Length: 202
Image 1 (cartoon, rainbow, N blue to C red):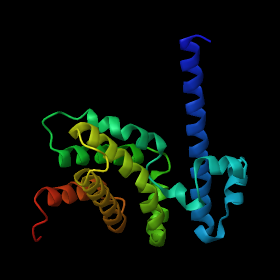
Image 2 (cartoon, rainbow, N blue to C red; image 1 turned 180 degrees about the vertical axis):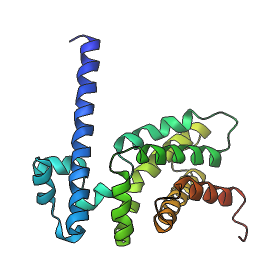
Image 3 (cartoon, one colour; image 1 turned 30 degrees about the horizontal axis):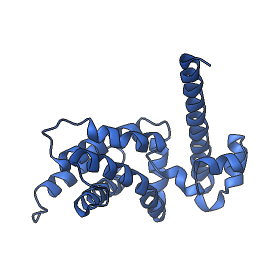
Image 4 (cartoon, one colour; image 1 turned 60 degrees about the vertical axis):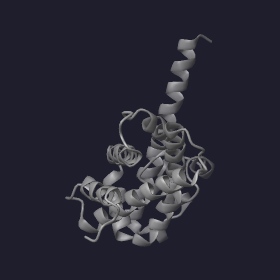
């Protein structure tokens, strides 16, 4: 197989995986909106998406995980995005920019608004989003560690990545409460402004 053929095959495989993931998310979220989250099973989702439960668990660990706004592609690009930022940008500015781009990528997904609608209706599901954010936090820490020439387990790196992810999560929660007509970046920018200024009294 030539390199070109291999690249084409790999690209086709990735597009199929992305399409399957999106089909599962779309099926699950439509069912959540129709019946309520508790009334929907993984089997229901698989029937609607016309795939097997085994396929479902290749992409998600639980039905609630379809509500996570960032997918594996966003996570995979995070470390490189950190390294690509201008050299004179501070670590907190880098994290702000990269996570802002992650929100933009999530908003480009066809299920973004429906995901947000379900989470607004079921705020008790946010812990599942928090749990899934660990992969994004780890990727952010990897990029920051490489950028700053430190170990990923360095306290500063871990604290910076964790704080940045918390700022993003809190911003998204505030946006859910405010309503879809508001730009989530308004909350993200405010959160990082507060972090950058040392969290003075508001």
